[in-house]
Image 1: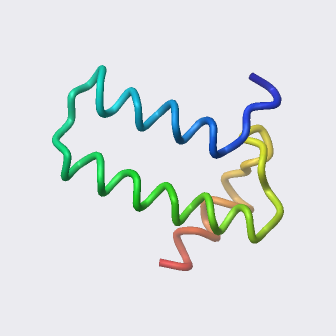
Image 2: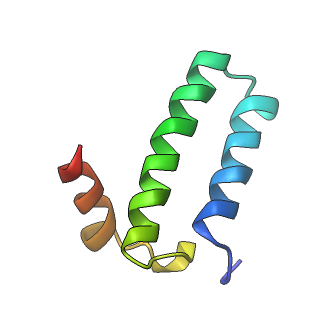
Image 3: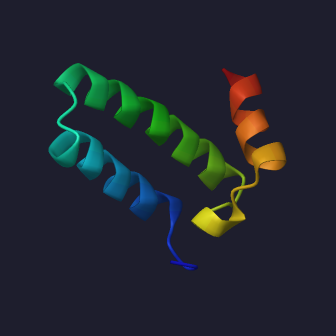
Length: 66
């Protein structure tokens, strides 16, 4: 788990939302689009591992970019 990438975590989460939680396709699409934007922003900041996502440095940066 320590070396899980953001991309892998997003894929697992989206699978869970779609197949286990059975959310609507519109909800899944919204989550996918939002998480892909976050993933792209992290990639631009050279943050690829999930363990390196920091609330202050990453999440707030993403919220401010919206």
